[in-house]
Image 1 (cartoon, rainbow, N blue to C red):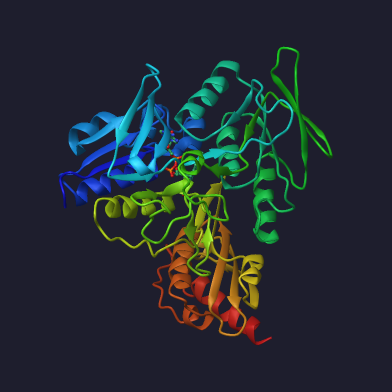
Image 2 (image 1 turned 90 degrees about the vertical axis):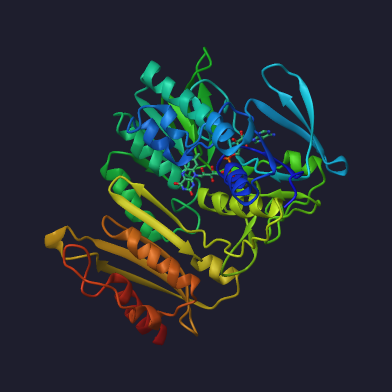
Length: 455
Ligand SMILES: Cc1cc2nc3c(=O)[nH]c(=O)nc-3n(C[C@H](O)[C@H](O)[C@H](O)COP(=O)(O)OP(=O)(O)OC[C@H]3O[C@@H](n4cnc5c(N)ncnc54)[C@H](O)[C@@H]3O)c2cc1C
């Protein structure tokens, strides 16, 4: 590999730093430069809810790698507080503004990786930018929000959004003794979540005194004369509150890519091939700014997640310095989260997604004990989507207070390996009463699924 290769990475978080570190491992002589807008790199965004709950006290614990360590131990030149402004692919150059001095530098590259991530969506309603309205994406947002919580001691908050991050944040804020209301626009808590699981999560939230309203359309945020937020107004009600948290999803940061005439996909994120190359020679993209593909349908999708970011980042970093890593893994859109004592997870296709992909599907609902109740076992709800002819597993949704993670992981393996209901009934899971059940919930799900199949 040539020592002349200069790899420039724009964005120094999960995808960008995975790319830079992998490139360094594969190519010890390359020059690697990371341009990062904020003052930090490698932030564990997923730990932000724990920081809000005060379970993690020091914000520095969210930083997995410091710029100084990246420079001294990995020979990666990190430029924090620098913003890439535009790319000129024909010159293999980009302009970068030093945000502290306003000086604009021109940097040339041999290979460029775009890992510019995503930005939180703010609903386009009046007063969405007023004092007391927060979003969460990075360390700055987390710090600003926690400072507000500690300084102003708000008694009530409305969380706009009812997805996994909203639920996790609501549970975190509950620890601060606040009155919490959650509002979602869909009939269920999340798109494509089975109503049974949605109801189980809502019950858990309500048991913890969180008010949950679904199927509400937000029309306005009311602000006081001193421009602090006062209430959320929906088509059905007015909810008075001291502050608001927006968690309604993210959109990919693609302005730089668009300005360099890099093709975007139908999802609006940067279109990449299996080697993470974009439509422009020498330019790669990875993480929340880029598309990935669905393992079952093989179609491009936008699935912003830390796992996809890290996996794509490694492949892009390796390929950018001359490797040939094929990111064939794609995604099953697997996710898992905690809502108070309840663990919820899902992977693969929902009913609607299976139908959209052209499958004739069956849905099987199963309730089975994680382990004997004498040892703290609890009922796990499992919803399986399978191909109605072959019995091939297409998707799973699962919730319970014990043993959910192990089963979800096993289902992810089974769906990826294209196993059938018959196959999972026969899987030889281990048993010990303190840990598991004699008939594992997944074996039971396979048996009930087959009966359902025969109907
Ligand atoms: C509260 C919260 C909880 C989460 N929990 C989970 C979880 O449990 N599991 C999970 O899988 N995912 C979770 N995620 C999502 C996960 O954090 C993201 O998918 C992941 O951070 C994406 O990494 P990324 O590097 O692609 O993008 P980002 O993290 O958005 O990083 C992009 C970086 O690029 C920089 N940048 C952008 N434009 C420029 C520019 N022009 N010049 C210089 N720098 C630029 C930005 O400053 C940023 O640092 C969570 C996210 C949040 C906010």
